[in-house]
Length: 65
Image 1 (cartoon, helix red, strand yellow):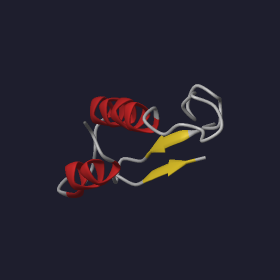
Image 2 (cartoon, one colour):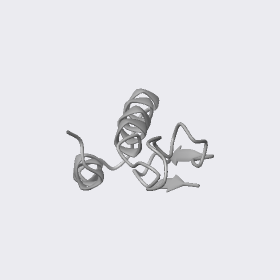
Image 3 (cartoon, helix red, strand yellow):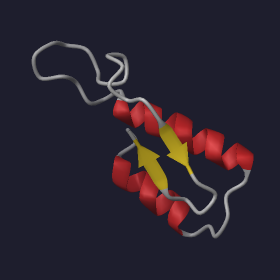
Image 4 (tube, helix red, strand yellow):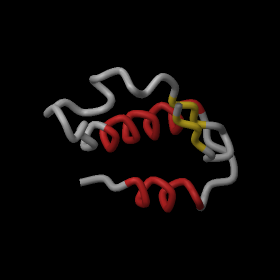
C-alpha cells in the first residue's frame, strides 16, 4: 500500500517532473487519500468531495486543498 511518505521519497530525487510524472504522482496521491475515511461514516474523504484541488508542481511540491 502506498503511504504519503513514500510519495515524498519518490519525488525527492527528481529536480523537474514532466507531465506524465505529474499525472502518475497525482493518481498515486488520490489512491493514498482514498484510504482516509471520515470517522463518522464509512466513506473516504476523496469521494465525500472534501478534496478540492491536488496540484503537483514540476518541482515535486504538492498542494492539496
